[in-house]
Length: 232
Ligand code: TMP
Ligand code: ASP
Image 1 (cartoon, helix red, strand yellow):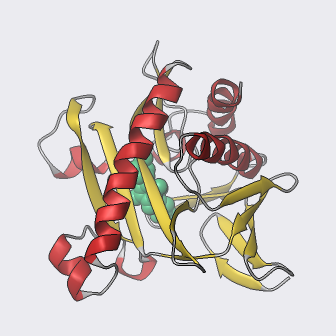
Image 2: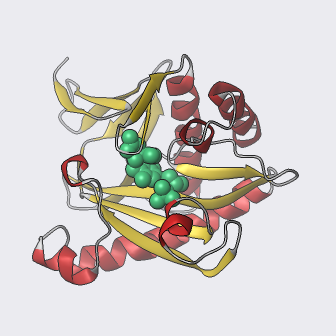
């Protein structure tokens, strides 16, 4: 099959239908712009299942996504989109890079949520953007930017509520958006343990990629626990 894109953890293929792509969630795990990497069997399957469930949830709440269907282990059929090269991060609780770079305390609640937009570019190390840079680099129009900000806040409210009922806190997560052939902006990429911080409400334990980033134990045990809560 013809490859559209090979990322650090996913491969996107063309299909016979020009409006549809097949996304393969691989078992590769990387962190810190690929400086740390390994392969963990079953990771791709868990991320595909979790993403599918969360995309379905968003669709149920009227948020349009690229999701069409799961297509076997670790594979997902999606609408063909052109990815907007922005990583929109919503933060509800301070953790990760925001604690390293700014005087926030780990675990500090961020009310209202803090949105941060990074440039999706491995070559430049995903630097943080602002409105002027986004405009000057022509990464998105003013209107698209307003849309993705508003959608990210809506997605945050929907995910936070759903996860909270399943005993999970959502400190932060990253979204990517794509433009479909008809010009509509859709939530794209994935929403999984690789792209969300998830903490068990009872213990504060991480059940996301921080387990790998900061060597906090067995990755697949953590992803399995997250999947158990999110899928049921
Ligand atoms: P950060 O604290 O490292 O900036 O990460 C914030 C959130 O974004 C966290 O949930 C992980 C997610 N994320 C990605 O999905 N991809 C990335 O490349 C990075 C840096 C973070
Ligand atoms: N930056 C991503 C992360 O840490 C993955 C990577 O950059 O290799 O989540």
